[in-house]
Amino acid sequence: GQCSAHCPVGAIYEKSQTQEFCDAVEADNVHVAVQIAPAVRVALGEVFGMEPGSITTGKIYTALRMLGSDAVFDTNFAADLTIMEEGTELVKRITTGSGVLPQITSCCPSWTDYMEKYYPDMIPHFSTAKSPMMMQGAVTKTYYAEKAGIDKESIYSVAIMPCTAKKYEIGRDDNMAASGVADVDLVLTTRELGRMIKAAGIDFANLKDSEADSPIGAYSGAGTIFGVTGGVMEAAVRTAYKLVTDAELGDINVNAVRGMEGVRKGSVDFNGTEIKVAVAHGMANVKSIMDEIREANEKGLEPPYHFIEVMACRGGCIAGGGQPYGTEDNIREKRIAGIYSDDEKSVVRRSHENPEIIQIYKDYLDEPLSEKAHHLLHTSYTERKLYQK
Ligand code: SF4
Image 1 (cartoon, helix red, strand yellow):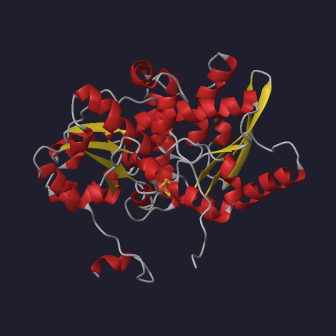
Image 2 (tube, helix red, strand yellow):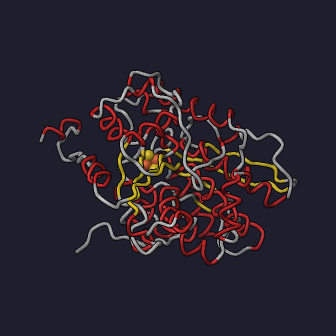
Image 3 (spheres, rainbow, N blue to C red):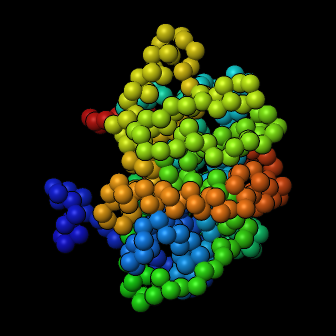
């Protein structure tokens, strides 16, 4: 087929799912609710001749409405929610000794699949927090549905992602239907959204900005930086520091975890307690860290780290497999700069200060790791065999 042109061995066919979006928009009594991932906003502009790293969040919201979406939300909101859950889980592991250390991030589906196949002994280390995309889907079909008075069965939940692996994540297991129906119905890549906007004849570069819808659309700068390697770690540190010390982190820019080195190790001073962290991106860089953890486990030594972030793609999601083609390192740098500048321009830069996050716990979830939060926002992992006989 013509779509196989991008795969050198012709083994992978990119199946476009844009028609499914159009069908949902045109169907009667279907409420199309869309979320966009952090990394999409700094790359989509490239499809329309804009500089890599241009922040096009407001234009994307406008374009999605022009394409027929009924509600436009932001995965960054759920990135903040992930930090509340995953940060609380980390603090619990550190302060109460319940659960093993280091805690390892689980928001990259390529990484969780890889771990289940190649590092099943690491399952207890994985955060049980779902990815932001899945959390956003779960609260769209429960909290939002209830507030808006819409049946969850009539909501069609769409996620615009920088990632092709996200297409499979939505059907991983029953936990992905925590609302009782599929929490996310369709994943489209940044490229697919670009093609739809082009096909609709929308002059994207000159669109007016608009805002995301409430009550699951507001986000902090910490939510935005999920799109880059080191970002989940930095966002988590900003909130975990507050949870542990009851004070705010002095310098909000956690430079120890920024940059493009394949493995970065650092520590953050939590008011006298040293919290050791490591960040790896690109699968080739994971092994040395996993070996270090495994060795400590086997020898009964102190865990070498408290928290590890892993992203399968070099540079993080800004360089995901669903982004515009031609992602070279100079493009990566520009998209990363775009993400950090979005964070710097944000009035709220800590997940726990996002007003809509405060509201959802007050109105609906009670507190991080509550029974309801567990049901909707957490998952589990299983060893997967490499070859099924
Ligand atoms: Fe997807 Fe890559 Fe991000 Fe993992 S790092 S979630 S594979 S885009």
